[in-house]
Amino acid sequence: MSAIMLWIWFAREVTLIFLIVNFTDVMAIANSERNQFRITKSNIIYQVVIRLLSRIE
Image 1 (cartoon, rainbow, N blue to C red):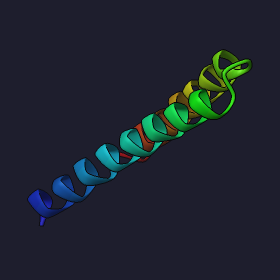
Image 2: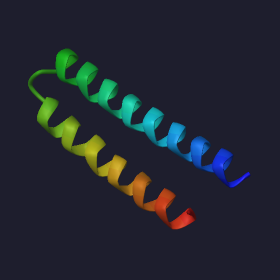
Image 3: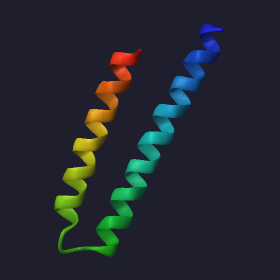
Image 4: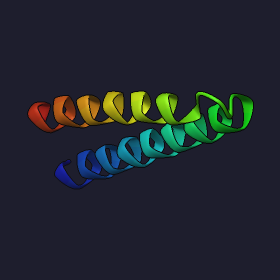
């Protein structure tokens, strides 16, 4: 059971990272003027989510 939970946790982390990276790439291409702001903003959101998930664990 513990190994299954660990795999689910790992899959969720990888999926989250993948989605965030894709989001920042799309925003950078779509909006080259404000891409730095948007990437910074999504990085902050990502850090907050990771901290929340770490506390749950």
